[in-house]
Image (cartoon, rainbow, N blue to C red; front, side, top):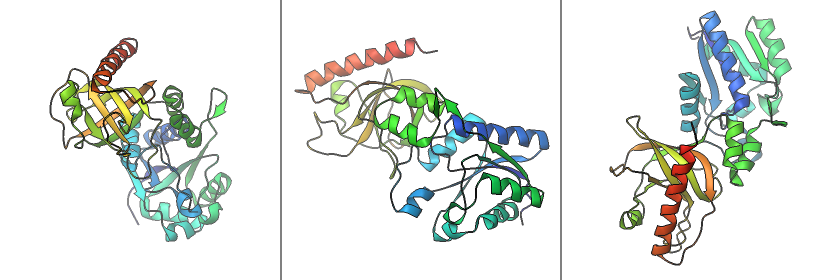
Length: 301
């Protein structure tokens, strides 16, 4: 039995979109009013993927999910439970008791469509009724509608795959994000006068539509720079390597970042990925992309 006294928001929180924001803001508000600890409980892998056997591409890695919750909402306690056979088979009421006994849940918050427990037999109505019986506070958050559509991770995945980064960001309520350790790449950018940092999407994480994006780059020490990010395989120079990476030229920046942890935020897709006749044509296009990014952020407050 823990001595913690927590307000816990429940959900998988893929993408941390504006529907999730309503849950997290409620958790913060209740915690402040009642002197409890605002917390989030989620899973390391997709329950739907585990139960159905069909992989669900994730909008963010678990690390980026936690990072978004920390940065945007100031919630430090993001607890990841491992989803396995035992988790999948726990009865819905036993799951609530576990949250209460092991994590100090004295107030639970969930969305109207939240399902939990074996075969998803637990729902918002059962959660609320059970919490009332046990003297546990409970809040149920209604569905969030944005631009006439229910906000959902499924909708956002489709937008990202189609290159609709601006529309996806509207539903997310923040720029789409990728955080990774900078890796060694082809290093061709150095010879073109536009060095790049090379990053990869984690296993199971959705790769947005290939193309060139206007991005902001957040460095270890808190420095923020504008960037030109290419998502794709670099068809002009890759020699047939089909590994998809996010390769970013940080504008007006030359320091060595290999091995550093860097966050990229995506704002606008400038164009699709293209194959050029040679490095001279590629170099000229990169310069045009740099100017496009400068103009884009000059108009963004």
